[in-house]
Structures are given as C-alpha cells and as structure tokens.
Image (tube, rainbow, N blue to C red; front, side, top):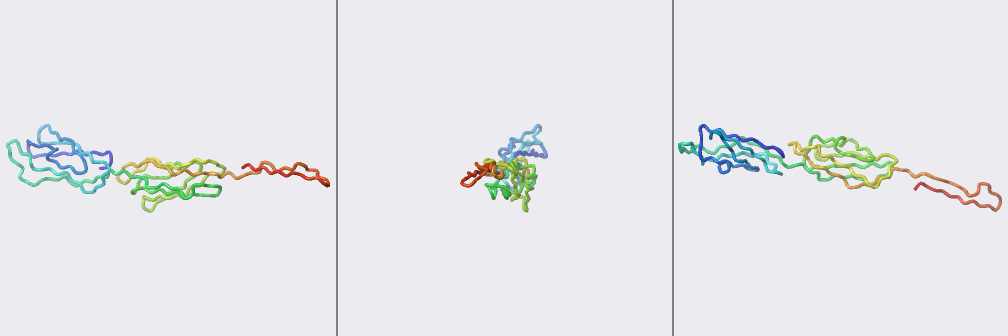
Length: 219
C-alpha cells in the first residue's frame, strides 16, 4: 500500500456469527479499518486505509476470538492473521537542490545536484527540470537518490533572476509522488562587452594640435 491506496478486507466465517465487531475484534496496525458489514453475518467486508507517513514492510490484521456463532458457541482456535502486507505512505522529499556556481558568465558551467530522501523512479531531468536561459545535460545517478548534471548558460544573456525548477512527475519506488523544488537564485551574464564608439575630436592634426580620444563601451 502506498499513499492514497486502500484495501478491501474480507472475512468469511464458516457460518453466521454474532457479537462480531471489527472495531473491537480486528487489530489494524498502521492504519484504520472502517466498520465491517455483512448481509448474512458470514461474509464481512470493510476498507483498510494506511496511515500517512508510514514505511513498514511487516504488517498483519489480526482477528480476535470474542465472537460466537448464533448458538453461542465460541471459536475455539487461536486468533487469525491476514497474510503480511507492506506499507509505504512516506512521500519522497528533496533534501537539496544546488548549483556549484550561482554567478555565471560566458564560458562558465555549473554542476547541478539533486539529493532525494530516498530512491526515485520515473525521474528524467529533460522532462522534470525546467532550466531557463540555458541547457541542463541529462542528470545521472548511481543510486537513484543523488543526481548530477551540468548546466550551461545561453550566450548573450544578462539576467539577474533565474532558478531551476523540479516538477512533481517522479515518484519513489512504491509509487508515492514527490514535491516540487527550486534551486537558489542564480545570475547569468554571458553578454560580452562591445565598443560602442572609439573617436578623436581632431582627425587632421598639425603642429601644436591635440586630439581628445574617447572610448565608449557598451557596459
């Protein structure tokens, strides 16, 4: 069971029973079992909902022995358990989403690192990370937890406000969806300076003359 899942629980007795109440007679760890109902007092059904933020590989529902048949005969055996079931309702989180360089100029690149709280699946940086004013090479991972890639800013860009944004289309291996996240702000200036003008006030100089030379850069 993952986040958002429920499971239908069914108990089939050998004959009609009385005094059975799932609230009192069924132990349901790490979740809640809605009151079980029956039309014939033989087959009983109810819905089990796991608790949020639980990760437990060992769980069973346990049926007690306080019920009887309609004649009043008590069940003489031991309590009964379901088969084991697993619960993972803990959504993955983003521990860190960082860049090694946050002031990028022409020729610079920045290593981008995402560290998730657990292994994720269905993650693709091409589809899941928005990279404005540049390109992010496909991020790779050795353990599906820590992912790295290289961001290269676009040429001729001057922008003081930029963030990489992680979408929510990835999940953990159990299928729980993860949250969005962003990097800290980073700046880009890949616009090279140019010479707007390079002038002289006098271009026909004779003895005793001078000329004022002026250079005006673009920035």
